Length: 351
Ligand code: NAP
Ligand code: ZN
Image: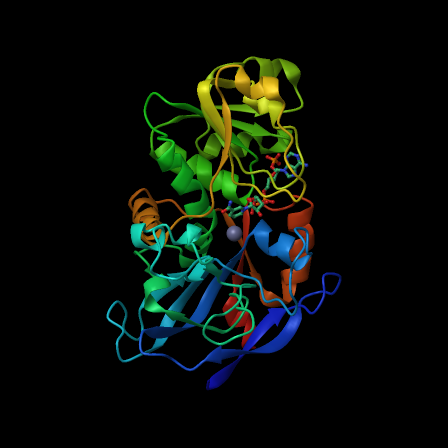
């Protein structure tokens, strides 16, 4: 297959910093678009993957899955896009397109395995997919999102992962008027979750380990903020919440949160701590509670989420950086020193 070379930022090993490298993108197939990447958000999953937190990372790796760009080329059968359009790519770039899940807009659960925007086996070009820390992306238009008119395009990039990852469960578990919900962890996902749940008219309690984030949580839309290390504050919510969205990236005790649920409530895990989650039997049998999970969202739902966020004026609170600052940004993300999402200005890769 013919390929074109693109500049990117990635690494050859878990203990090596990210640096500039060359990657290959396929020449356009009939349904492909090519985009020049303008912005790419940094998700904690990028950090987990680069550091091999979950095991199984294959190197070299080029992370990045919150991608906004400008279409520079279209294959002959492309109908959704034209050259010059602003478009976006999230976590999913391919799937079998034929299974029960793909046929019902749940490509994230594809029977043959979803192809993610980086680090997945590339069924078309061979090797692994390379993500958005790069100049260009080539993708079948089916997996490319149309971008509504956001005032700040860079701040909209995190919606492509953080946005859909929280929108999908908030909708599925019916956040809305009369629902009292918890959001656990005020980071990239958590802060977007507050904004979206607020726009859905749910009552929101934020649980954080960081007292310093209290004012931010309120400003973002929380009705109450609980410092999770404060037992008295925690006990106030015993048996009171309809569900809790758990966005925490590291090991924590989920049983404490199960006890805050009403009957039939659920702690919905979206955070991906590397260690298994321990659930005490008494935490779930009492009140018929459950632990559940959710993985990003399908393409149609991602498009719906973008429309919802544009309509409600929701974007992420970001710190815009140049690609040359990416290693420092990873260190800061690791230590929780970001309010609340880094986004890379990909023009910096061309300099
Ligand atoms: P992030 O910005 O680093 O936010 C994580 C938050 O978790 C932190 O801000 C912190 O909030 C809290 N936290 C961190 N360490 C903690 C600890 N030891 N105990 C308790 N709380 C702790 O990360 P993110 O980008 O939002 O991603 C969050 C997680 O979701 C990651 O594991 C990521 O891989 C995963 N993820 C999953 C999906 C999916 O589809 N399921 C999609 C995207 C990301 P406070 O300071 O408020 O305590
Ligand atoms: Zn992500």
